[in-house]
Length: 160
Ligand SMILES: NC(=O)c1ccc[n+]([C@@H]2O[C@H](COP(=O)([O-])OP(=O)(O)OC[C@H]3O[C@@H](n4cnc5c(N)ncnc54)[C@H](O)[C@@H]3O)[C@@H](O)[C@H]2O)c1
Image (cartoon, rainbow, N blue to C red; front, side, top):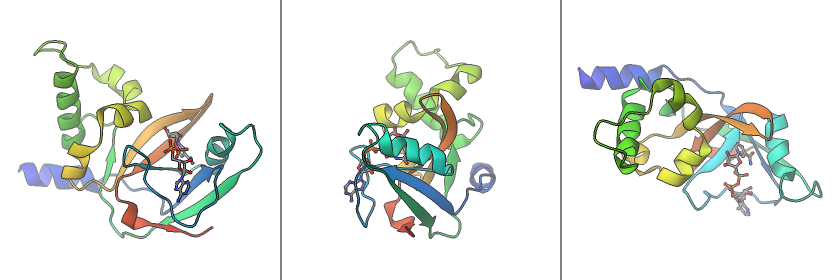
């Protein structure tokens, strides 16, 4: 039963196969950052904002990226009903040490489930579940968009 629940949850999220990464550097292979994540977005305008954010708009490289895996395992962090997200949330609540009965309310979870969560609390649990990509809501300044944290760098091919 648990297996079927997990299967249903992992099948319900589909993501675009073409995504974007903005960078101030030029390179041929995207390397995971210090948190083991490669950040992509489906919105080229958002990617461009990240390319220029730290360099005073002096250089801008927009990479178009293709995900090569046919059915990547995708988790949407905003969805606390996904069993993997629920497990992550539970571990986080315990790590926060705010008491055994402390639960982050679902309404607050949607705002909490951003980039800082993955970068601060890590992706080990998600990798244990063989998650390839995590969807989060994000903002480049005031520009709202979705971001895709790729945990499996092998599924990325740069199209340029
Ligand atoms: N850059 C984007 O297009 C993008 C997309 C979605 C979200 N974000 C957000 O921006 C924040 C920062 O993410 P980030 O990806 O910009 O930077 P990051 O903090 O993940 O740092 C990694 C840096 O290394 C660069 N890099 C990757 N491969 C390289 C290589 N082979 N040689 C040299 N440099 C290489 C990346 O372009 C990036 O600038 C994240 O918290 C995320 O929420 C960025």
